[in-house]
Every structure is written in structure tokens, then in C-alpha cells.
Length: 111
Image (cartoon, rainbow, N blue to C red; front, side, top):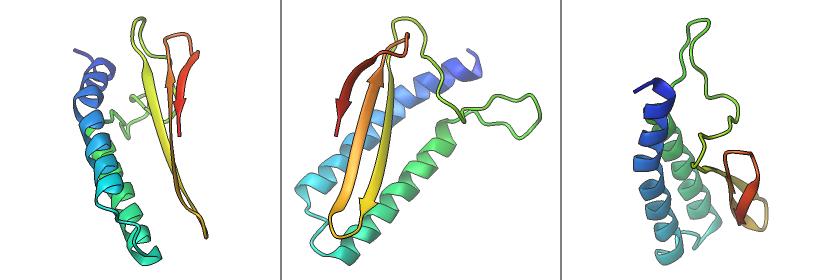
């Protein structure tokens, strides 16, 4: 199995449980009880996501290596799920997810 195909399999296996565990901790454990706790929680979320991406990405430092630095259409019959988060001063944190098919058509947006 090539790097891209194995990365997709790893993302499917690792990313969704990670996302839902973090989401549930945010929703049910009320970590935003103060600005400081919210910021620390968000920093941990970003750190955990960064560590996760290191584990599943196929980035190579050698010239001509595989890079996941840009969005690529998924294989036919597969969807790609992209997520993002932002901190808004005085408001809180925003999370969003975009789901696209193998033609790049947006199937759903969750925010």
C-alpha cells in the first residue's frame, strides 16, 4: 500500500475517534469555565492535533518526496473531511468541518 493510501487509512482510523473524544470533552466537561482555562484547552487541542498529524502524514524532507501541504481530491467513492478552528477575542472558539467528494463538491459544512 502506497504512502497516500496508507495515510488515508490511518486518517480514517485515527482522526475521527480523536475528533469525537475532544468534542465530547469540550461539550460535556465544560472546559470554557474561564478565559484562561479555555485558552489552555485550545492550546492542548492544537498540540494534540499537531501530534496526530505528525503520526499520519506522509511529508518527506527530501526533494521530490510526498507532501500533504495542499488539498488533493480524494479517490473515487471517498470523501475528504477538512477541519479548522479559530479563537475569537471576547467571543470564544469556532470549529468548522467541510466534507467534499472526489470531484471537490462540498457535501456538507458543519460549524
